[in-house]
Image (cartoon, rainbow, N blue to C red; front, side, top):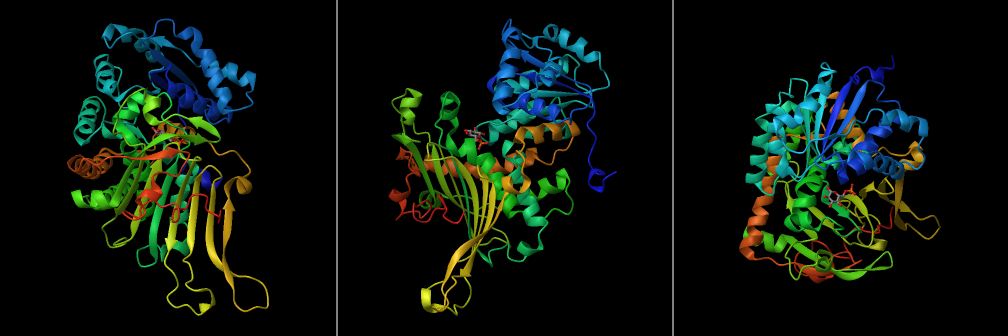
Length: 496
Ligand code: BG6
């Protein structure tokens, strides 16, 4: 056997029960991910998919919808493979959480009593507790069962603890898979490899050599049809509390001694516990919140946030920029700038490590030498670029300019990167929790976030409006926070 395969856990037969089985997430992500892995030959075991819905007769259109969404995610579908996949899908109508309504599911699961059962709760988090309770009362949970849950897991530390407590009444922590889909992205997983498989960076990976770190997740989309949910969370809870903090953890954490779930998660919790708490003063100087107004994105006129919501007022932020400090030995005094917003000119996610400049300039002809940059483009155009000063050829003395050493993922690996959900589904089936959040991790993130939401409340901090299609309220805050300025940000980085 190939050595690299020796430690890979085998895929065992499974049943997956998808609550909210005709919903948006299931159609857009769960079924296409399962199909892709099936088509790739990775799900070469016996398995069944049970989409569950409370809508009578939902089965009739479900398979067509699944086909449509699989097709969207995979331009060419092999019809024969889809027919085989289709046979695995067994939709079930379960109108309520009464034990009687679960009897049919129970008898179907009993046909394969030795299979692991994965309960995927693709529903609002307010339903998690009741579904888990119903599964428990129906005696559908055993030592091999797993439960998968999606964010938002609450809207505060207290509500997230409440949801966790409800789930923990039925499942043990090692059976709970809390998804943060950013962790399933190839380029995000590569952050671990970049840091811990390359000797090159380790010695310069600290505030001694790094001037600042910038993490940007920009989206061109607005709130689309998710206004109800979004207006209650805003950019801070929707993106920073989970995705951006996870990215920060991967950049700031210490190397785990082995690549096992709890070793990795222990290191991430330590970072979250070191985040400098906001005070009412620092919330004012180090954070900015904005909301999009009308404008043009990709040459199309788009509505303001309030128009999208059909509301007259809302203080929900669709943009947030934060200056964050990780108060520990490695990172003391290195600011991490986190920025995310909707209705930006384009979609891109990027991490930039800005190194300090050289100690002494022996080439004074061009003034101060800019520091090196490591630019990690997570999506789209997945690339890593190391920007270094290079001599411009010519006899006219030592002139230099920043040039990138570039790794282009697509060019190098020549294959389509799997969707984040494909990797996460396989990890769930295999029982690997490394890429899933543990309860204490989630709580540590909430504790820190609440120092900011509390301060925003006390300060009655308002949003700054920014035009859709702009890079946020940058210029307006240039003189206050220096957090997001058009001139210092890395969007449209010329080096990549
Ligand atoms: C989700 C947020 O978690 O992530 C959305 O709820 C956001 O608001 C999305 O659009 C972004 O994910 P991606 O993978 O498109 O960057």
